[in-house]
Image 1 (cartoon, rainbow, N blue to C red):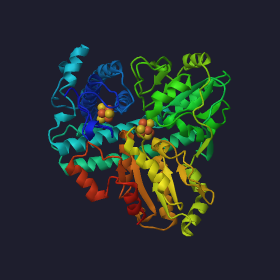
Image 2 (cartoon, protein in one colour):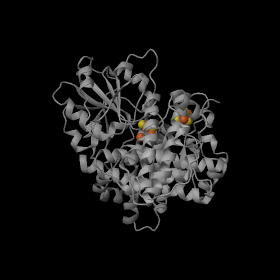
Image 3 (tube, rainbow, N blue to C red):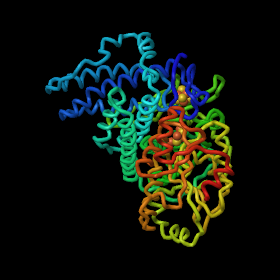
Image 4 (cartoon, protein in one colour):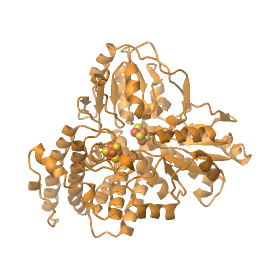
Length: 548
Ligand code: SF4
Ligand code: SF3
């Protein structure tokens, strides 16, 4: 075993990647990510005690947030970036320690002092191999610690997007650091760790609400939009990932240059925002969910900008690998990385100049898909929706949010969506939608049968809609609503969405295509017994179960 990682749904053999990641992450990168996690846990020992003494270090807050985000599946494969982050982290650790000591805070000895980390990268490699996930021997404790950490990674992603738009809450940073510290505390009982997981979910709700406020304040409320999936005859730039501030800057900088802009994968919902729709050179969406990029980037012809996950390593003979750029938390060796200046401004001129030399994209699809059903838009249709439920025109809603992935078993979601009775409506968010958003599922009295609220973080909108319906129907419990949850997961943003839903009291969520490898049998049992969490079976069996 040269590494161990089991954080995503595609963990090898359903238990964990031990030689190389199924995602393409090398053992070296997996180990150095573990070392960065370890450094962040170390910083959090000091920053948490410092905070209790009234000291808050903004650099630490941002460092921890970005460090967690960088280790999300498919965000960053660049070892050099992790080595740089570890070096910066060690300096920050000394800084916050000194700040706190100067203020009279006393610390005990930490297990590993700064001198334990030597200067060379080879030494980092050696250290990296002794701080990984398996150092927690008890599998239930390990499971709860990692469940917390994966929730934190998703949380950090949403906190960082909001921060990029000028929205932040000190309590979010404080929770991340407190929870990281708690994952090193051997005195915590299983019950205390379960409580920590639930607290993580509650913080997930706050973070998603904050990001929703940030996005809608900056760019308006998403509105019903028909998104073109064909192409123009001009060269284009394809923007992927989840960061809307990057989207805004790219649209502004490309205006009038003769270069068009297309969204890819999780950036599709950018098409629903009034502030972006106004750009004439914003053509629409190209391609599908992240895992098809090796094929679809070949035909796009123009440069590609990753703002976050999900990156798939290009094949050795790919024709596009010299045209890929990363920014923010994302990175890949050989891809050019664009950093923001001190005012948060990113200069995309190199991408634009490159695009001008490229051919227009090759059309791989034609037509339109419809979306923009975030909470504000759905509330404007509330009367219609409520009537449809009261008259029985809508029998049930199916929340099918989450992630897509490459496993063949995910065909289940396409088949399930196609097999749903005509008096049901799918509520979706995240890249899971690509499994069925191009099927002709029709509408119910003008309400489309697939209501796309947006990105994975916009799953918050689905919770707001559910809470609103609970109020309208005067129900005591969110679980009395005619809503079933059949959610697909892949990476750690789906983990925070799941924990957020649990913290809102949602029960009987079905999760697929497989349950997480990081849930030990005992922890899985707690989730099943307390929240009614379940997996998936066949489409036929599940359809009967959900409709009864
Ligand atoms: Fe394996 Fe997933 Fe970890 Fe990649 S992120 S190494 S695929 S478990
Ligand atoms: Fe997708 Fe990577 Fe999770 Fe934001 S882009 S939902 S998998």
